[in-house]
Each structure stands twice: as C-alpha cells, then as structure tokens.
Length: 201
Image (cartoon, rainbow, N blue to C red; front, top):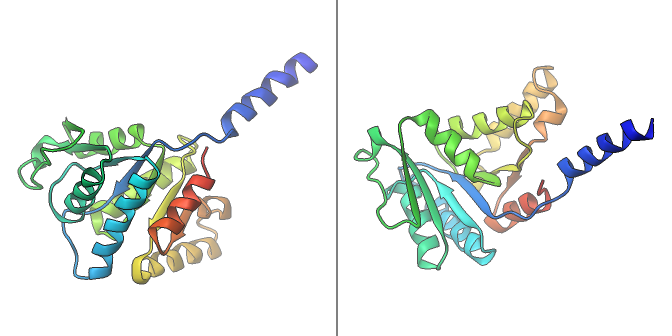
C-alpha cells in the first residue's frame, strides 16, 4: 500500500511547491484611456516588474497602455516579450524595439502563446480584448489547465463592478467559491504583485 500512496503524495507536492515568478503577462489595451491615474499606475507597474527582475509578456503593440508599459520596462533595463497577430500588426502598430516579438497567425494563438510564456497574469483597466484575455485565463485555471496566479489592477475602482458581479454569480450558485478566489485584486501595482508572488505555484 505504501508503494501506491507515496508516488501520489510526491506528485501532489510537486504540483503545489511554490516556484519563483520569472515572467508576468499583462493584459492591456491599445488605447490610453481618459484617467491619468491609469497611466500612472501602468508606469508604476512597469517599474515594479523591473524592480523584481520580471520579464514582461504583453500584446506586442507600441500604442496605448501596451506601448506605455513596454517602453517603460525597456527604459528601466527590463526585458519585454510581445505577441501580436499578423492581421493587426499595422492596426496596433507592432513595437519594433522589444527583446522578443512573436508574430502569430490569430488572436487565439496570441492568447495561448502569451499564456504559455508567462508565470502569472495581470489585467490593467481595459475593454473587450483585455476582459476576453482575463476571462480565458481564469476559465483555464478553473479547468485546472494551469495553476498560475491571476489578478486585476483595480485603479480608482475600475474593476469594482466586476468584483461585485462575480460575488453575485457566487451568491446565485453559478460560480463556485473556490473558483471565485482564483482572481486576485490590488489597488496598486506593488500590492497586486506582492499578492501574486505570494501565490506562486
């Protein structure tokens, strides 16, 4: 019996043993938004990534929050990996100064490549694209396709309504409490990043 139990225990330990973050995927848009605090928080997040020697993985654009984030990390001496589909290289203006730029065939491939390259995920305030990437990441975590930490940077309460909705989904029995806890929130880059690093898996 011990021969049967021991491998299972070891397998469980291997799965849950913390590992340090090396790369962080940041989901954000090609638009800058209208709230200056979102821009400031984007710059602060870039500084935190550089401070902790974390490589940025993002959507590969030189515009909006994506460009701002990438440029700041590069200016600080950090590494940046972009992933951008061929059909929006011109639309979003692909960044030409990255450490690595992956040009892929579709939006679906973009998401899967970013997820593969990353040890954790952060969503800045954003629109449909950002939310799509965030929820696919959470869905994959719910399905046990990965166990990497996921968080949203809740600048000026941007994601308050989303958090309220998810709590409502739990109260209606449509979202399991354990899966609700998959999403971390932080009001500042340092707070959120600390949560994700503490949740390393």
